[in-house]
Image (cartoon, rainbow, N blue to C red):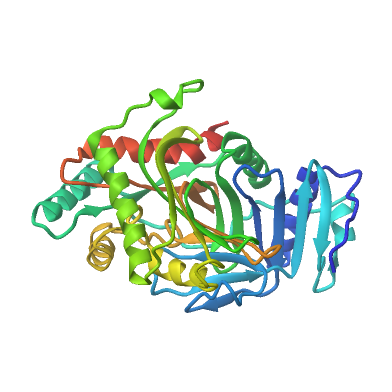
Length: 393
């Protein structure tokens, strides 16, 4: 049952800090998120996670999905046993709000033990150096020259020391402020650890109006405040990379004989401190009588050519063998499913995983035949700065 409750005299930030700390201390899992260009924040929590081999968006109970990069690995579904919605500084609705004896009243108590959300997890021992990444890009170019791939997307991780006063909830609010057009999230569970991100790339969206949406996002350059987006020019490499992602999405439509789709773009868009090229695809599911399109396309699209390569299977195998580390949930997907009758699934980009005293940042870059290793390294640095800037503040 949905109802409105007051959290006065607590601010939303205080409420979120208290609620998530209590969830963490009880070893419950939670997801905190804000959709792009939306004033609403959501917090969902559960005692139990579901690990699923396959995802069915149409039949999933309301909750939050968190899936790894490797499509063969199990996906995580967090049921929204507790679900809070906040807007304009107010708690506008709650559902559940009583996990294992924890009630909403506990979140308003005067004293609570604030937490750092750092689970005891093994820290990855191998971090690629700039030289290592240059060599990986060169290996990708060699493979493309041999005709093995059209495109491949190598990635890397970087360790950044966290300040002693780093606060996850403050970081979430800063990411919301700096990245108004991104899906901003915190996902925390004993199984996955704690991940924070601000991703610009929609993977699958199914709205109440029974319209399916997805996007092609590629090309990267720094954003300067006040620039006229109509005056931005793109390199041939960026244009070609964007076209490859578009063709990949269209090929997925063709596989399932969907011909009635609207394509808008590409156009230049702002994503935090960066610019990208973006094309939007829209399908009226009711008109073509395809109610399960969201589930079918989610399986076909992930991992997209924007995070893996083309063709898919050889690219996935190459990256597993050559990157030298486990991406885990970086470049997987995440987002609310069937919350208020809508599902919004995003590619998990511009993200970091939290450890004791350090954060592990992730980023990748699309490599084509004419890619320059130094330019690709700088691109990953720019992408990591989306999270790096909130750590340094």
